[in-house]
Image (cartoon, rainbow, N blue to C red; front, side):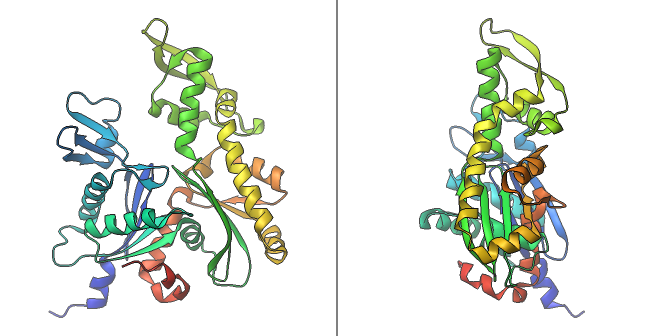
Length: 344
């Protein structure tokens, strides 16, 4: 029986969006095959990783004794290297099976503006988790490819990627980033802001999962898209007893106002740095909004009102970067300008 070696090699190529909130893996020839929380459950004494992903996510805030469930990636960068390696290794093996003989080629999505040490941490983590070679691709480039934007063309595209830990904003042209900025204000900071707001206004403590549910179900950044109220449960900080309360879309909007202002400042800064010729392209083509935060109600309306530019949300905003990584690993020859990101 003859073997198709090119297909075998492609089948072991992975695009990995290793995010603060979620990890997505694109298996060449198959598509996105894994989308799970970037959470690891460990033994707090030995730091042995017990579980990762969905199973570990269910344990956040509910562990006892020597168990601890947490996110080893914070604000888009690796906070706990060893746990990240173990978590990523388990994710890769879940997708590819044993990798002793055929280690995969991997492309990893990284935030803008990383230091050399932070970039090296991503390279080393992927290599230690089982990758044969590692290519780092910055989030706006991956998002643009995933949204079918021809980034090699001589015209400007404006990308806003609101992830779990960072918001990445960039003007892209001729296969490169012309102007960019990154701010560590994104979905996870919104959750933190909602928890703090509920604590200060209602004297009630809620969990990160409850804050995220509020953001997803009734969260809005524009009054036109308010959807009413949601009942949540928490702990009354005065009595220490369980309590329920109704939280409105207006509450969520007020809570995340400071985070949104940081994101808006980042967008304004990149537009100011963009050359006039590319600004004209952006005005004609509009702004592309990607990442999990792109699903926040009213965001396209707000951004369009502030910039005067049409805003479009990607078809699969949370998966756009992973799709772009997948297209790169399937057809790297189509993106010769990304060879500058070759890491290992």
